[in-house]
Length: 262
Length: 246
Image (cartoon, each protein chain N blue to C red):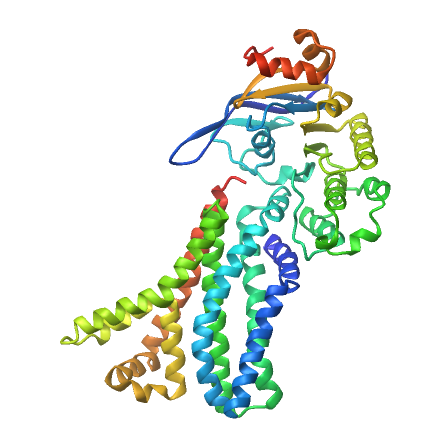
């Protein structure tokens, strides 16, 4: 426990000073501020931000995370040459990467809204937006850590990271749409729900859009989703799926880290 | 004769899962307390893997590593008694040297007596407050060296310690190594610079293709190969593809 916190402390201290991470916070600040100025409406701005967040957060988390951890190789060796346990070191490294990214994201998005002051409804959706970004950062930083541990070659690792992101962002949705089109004669609401749970970005997308009154536009499927996500079961299943999406890569990465030769 | 500090028996390691490459093959090596042992051999002979096995950075497939009689494979606590100076000192570039040192103190639990001699002789004071990214390679290497000696460890493991150091810093470091040996510390060192090892080493282990091809005192190496310097002696062993363990 102690080692986790110590590793986290110094790793995070390095990460928050990284120009890339500061740029990431400023990027979200500018996008949120820009959208607010153009639309003048916090609710519309947040709805537009959903697409940006779902696209950018996974990409930056997985690419920045992978590159950062490859660059930290000698640092990790230095830590492991001290009397520390590998399991705790790994957890510290992961949190030391993910928490600064969450911080940068939260500050970037939150600041423009806080400056203006927003009503209660907009607060709800802002919190949902921040929560979704946090969960996605957690998942994609965990995948980045897994890749950096498993893959010795940094170019291959970076390629894998981008491929994973493309799969989950573009290819997977294409596949689902294709399936829905081919099978359009059958009731697929349940199947769609299951397929969605298999992709963290999709879970985040639907969970977010349903909070924005956008569900009314989604017709019958939207109604099924709304019922599912509003219910206790739906909430529990969604929370479980998102947790699994964070824990699975963390656990796989930790096991690989414990066996790794540096 | 001095006590046994590190005893390595039957240490083997292979890398790769598809094309398996043996890096260390049943290495046996004894390091005695209060002596400096130089690990020499051509590139890719397994020197760094051997050193990293002692530190637990690389996990051996077979074999045992005993430190003061205790098997340390898979253990963690014993590393508080080792000071490690890695070959490459590219640590997190946004941290300062002082923060790195603070981190090591935190991780080690801060019971050991601090040895700041190298920090002072290198004149690192002002540089420690700056982020590593703005420091020169030589200065970073000085920080790296100072960190290995900082916790007054029983065992020093130094991988190419003088690489990147100017002659003055290099001399300071060598004096420090010899002084610590005099104080009863055990040193395992690798280097490509044989003249430097000649100054430092009591014993020499010659690694070839993952095997210990020769191990003995500095004088024995020179006598057996009939050469006047360690550099010539090692060159002779390399050209003959030395296979006799002494």
